[in-house]
Length: 180
Figure 1 (cartoon, rainbow, N blue to C red):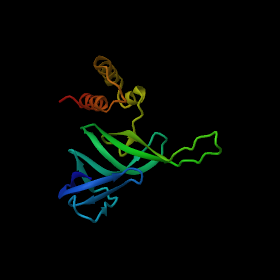
Figure 2: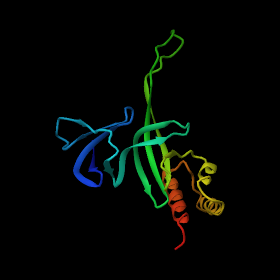
Figure 3: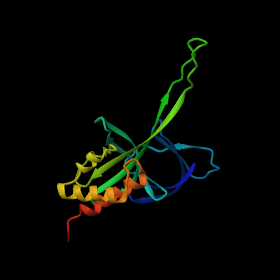
Figure 4: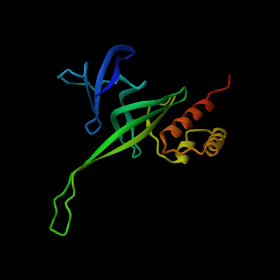
C-alpha cells in the first residue's frame, strides 16, 4: 500500500493508503496501514487520488486502435493547451502444460505496459499518444511543428522516455500559447 491524498471533486477527503490493481482496473483503499478492512474505490470520475503530487482518476479515453475505454489515468502534465496522462496496463497470459517431454511447459505470467495519452484544450477526448514523432507533429500547426522538431533534435529527446516526453509536451504547451 502507498500513501495518497483522496479528493472528491476539489474537496479534500483526507489521507489514505491505496493499492492499484492494474489488471482489473480497480483501486483498494484503507485509512491506516494496520487497518484490516479494504474498500474498493468506486469508479466515479469525481474521485481523485493525488499520488506523489500527480492526480490519478477514473477517466474515459481512446486507445491507438480507436476503442473507447475506461480506466485510471495519472496526470503527468497539466498545461494550458496540452495535458499528458499515463496509464499502467497489465495483461495476463495463461500458461500451458507441456504437450510431451520434448516441449517445455509455459508458466502463467503478467506483462506490464505503460501507455501515454494526450488531451488538447477544447477537445473533449483523450487519445493514446503513439510513440511516433509524426503523430505528435499532427497536433500542431506548421510553424510550431518546425520549432518542436528543432527542440527534439537539439535536446536529443526520445518519445519512449517519460521525462523526455514530459519535456516535449511542456514545450508544446508553452509554444502553443497565443502571444499576449
